[in-house]
Image (cartoon, rainbow, N blue to C red; front, side, top):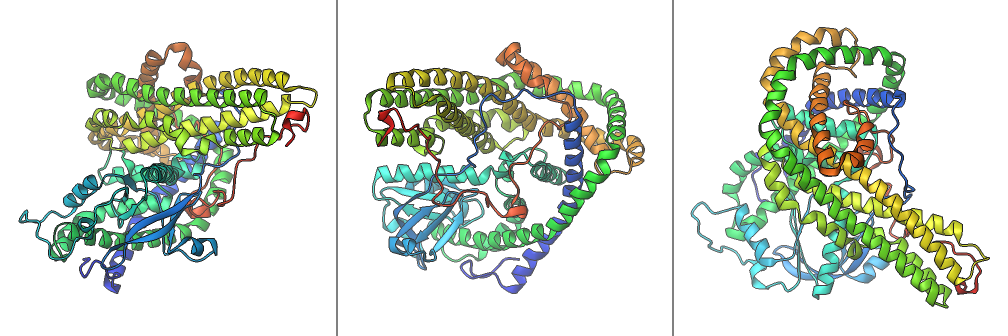
Length: 619
């Protein structure tokens, strides 16, 4: 299927095979996507009409889009045929794209990079021995021998400060920094870019993003994959590419690996180059297919809005009536399922998730308080307005400072292995998504708290105040912001953990009840079909019933873990149906292009506009 030399471009036959497989995927996936777009419109309209209002946020929402701080500098890169270590100048853009140039001047003159990649799906390794062990597992020789038919450049030159970027379906990128300090700075920057690129859909509250993720889940469920995993990290086209690459991988291994030249790590290197060529072809076709679907999607959303809104009351009444009948039918088997593995592990997993998020948010609060204290000290002791403005600017940049925020991110990272062991029995393999989600939450709350502090401080620092008076005002603002932060972080923690627990247990419960669902749902289908709307399906109502019962169990466990008073206000606004998320702050790749709303390389956070008097603020 995919023979030939791995370093060569795919021939026409191979490209046609990729095209056919992507087109087949889209033919199966797009009907599911259309159905979830209809469900998302119903969900949004129902939420607008709901009398329940979720608790409002205390902090101001930061207007700064998620981004990474641009990072650049010289590295050594393993590239060419045969591969050799060569000096390059690397640039990590604010949207999480890595570029490399032959030298700094080429970058500064606006030249084209030697290469570039979106960091979606990569993992950073900084240990050469660990990376070589990974290569050994990719293409093990059938004989077990490690003969070297060709020179192995990875072994010829030990790497002092390596940065290996590994991807399951793409060519590996091997760099080396000059010092340990440079290696650490690049590692933190690259990890930030990987997280930014990976969580673009999860961060979005756009109905289309929710519909897409639900459609991917249902498509994979139809393929027999009930447990969630990290395949949904990335933009819409990247997600579909990862889904198809997983389907292609067994055949690629069986039909291509025996014909690869070389042995050992040289053979593994060739394998990653072949995967990269296939991945690029799949991604290009998937992107084109989603772009072609965009006009239809726009028309569909507009038509759904026109047809659903007038009939929403009738649709919700029908949904409630069918849901009541279904609940009575599945209550017994569902409760039996929940009393088993779910009841045993739910408390432990809940406590682990809560402690993971709490540790990250406590670190954020500590970091925020220290930043404010540092500002107050400079306000009291500095006679230089320029220095104070520099400190204010640094404070505003805290959410995007990878070195500072690493303290918060580490707390989430340290729970990865324990979480993985706890959730694996339920078929959940998405611990990377959980860690990224906790880190995104920490960064967003830090950004909101910083924005709130700067705005409140700007309002209270008037020209009539001297330095001591201004410092006292900042102390009052500090207390207000920390109080708001504690309120918002508590609510956000409850919502996130609740959503994660549903993501872990809902697919497992659905898989346990799958045979019963197939037997019993047809009897209820006629009532829903009579409505004639794609927004209402018997499968959707059935999942909402299961989700509702499971949510009650989760809410009870959360109240035990967090305290009833702490969590009740958050959970009161959560409906059994997944219709509690509204708004649209980000779009998928097919709508605007990957991360097209990210700021350019020169975009920065604007510092607080301090008053021209007292004299201390003047430069």
